[in-house]
Image 1 (cartoon, rainbow, N blue to C red):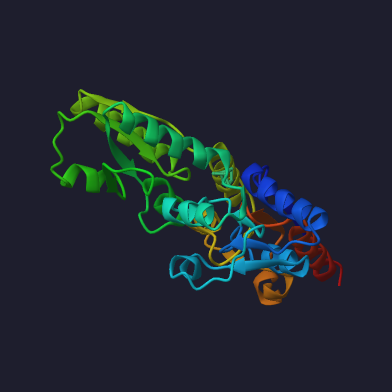
Image 2: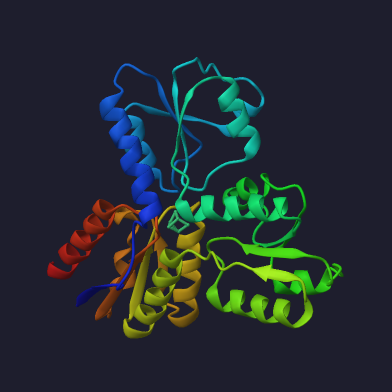
Length: 289
Ligand code: F3S
């Protein structure tokens, strides 16, 4: 039996930077209180590790209800998905030290949105309005029309002659983006389209797709709340019905491995390498028994 890794998997650069920034602060600022706003990244192991290093979770809700006890000089780290404008404003009022770990892909979309509105464009945004990344980005705009996908845009009856900037969630599937681009180019004469899809997501999805076709069973490793992990699972499951989503080594059921020759593994963008290695070791242990 063989264990094969996807060609690209695990921590993306946005997650790595957020985690490294937090760890560096925990080492340097021993005398200050440090908080992460919500889950810094969508992985419980990473969060537990940061808590053990002295970084506490401050929920956005608590801050919005003014029920926090933040004091001047406390440190607050904004998570990799970014957050809503109201939170940035609150933190500024409280005079805390803000470290923004929002991924540069996310801040680039946010900045483009603000800039294009200033130039007189309305915004068409394609994405999941309930996802924290999207909530954060669109909170910086005043004239945003949000659609979950191309069909919703088509059904909306929006005035096609308006002046629009078209933006999307970082994790939008590339093929769906191309469909949106084609539709906009055909029917919206005054629209500008921006491709800000995160490359890290795309290459992980492509690698998962390839892997799923080459092995007998796929383990997708990642947090239950991680939407990019869920997408890897869906892609793999669509190709290989022997696909399982696990968070850690103890989730592996030995029955799954009966008669299996090649096991493929892939992992979401917020899954740390040490978890992946533990899983590989467990698989090798089972294999060797
Ligand atoms: Fe950024 Fe893409 Fe990762 S948006 S946080 S590099 S999945």
